[in-house]
Image 1 (cartoon, rainbow, N blue to C red):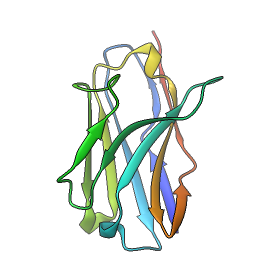
Image 2 (tube, rainbow, N blue to C red):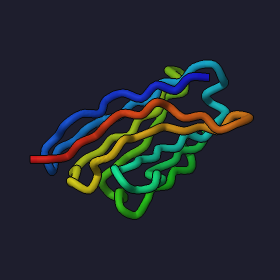
Image 3 (cartoon, helix red, strand yellow):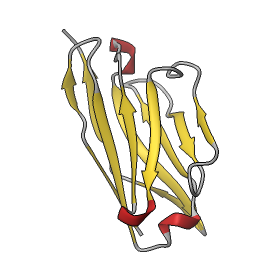
Image 4 (tube, one colour):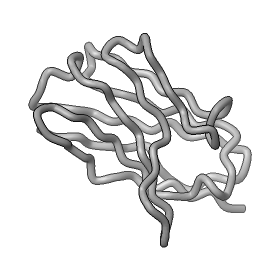
Length: 114
């Protein structure tokens, strides 16, 4: 099982980024995909989750209306579109799945700063 995040970077407040999480080694369409983030000195917190075909989606209150989670099961990839980014969104972002056990990607850094 492998999860690889990409798409992070440095962006100014109000900007946008799209993160990707590409999976391999398991049946991607049979798992929920979760996005988490961890800021320096803080605990890892959930950001968004998406069900098998996208029929059920949840967001943390702090990102509702700004972030959109989606997935393309044909590409074994999930996405997190982040708009109107704020400095408090600065964190390492991780994707997570549970397939017999918990799996995490290596993370991608998002820095929001002017």
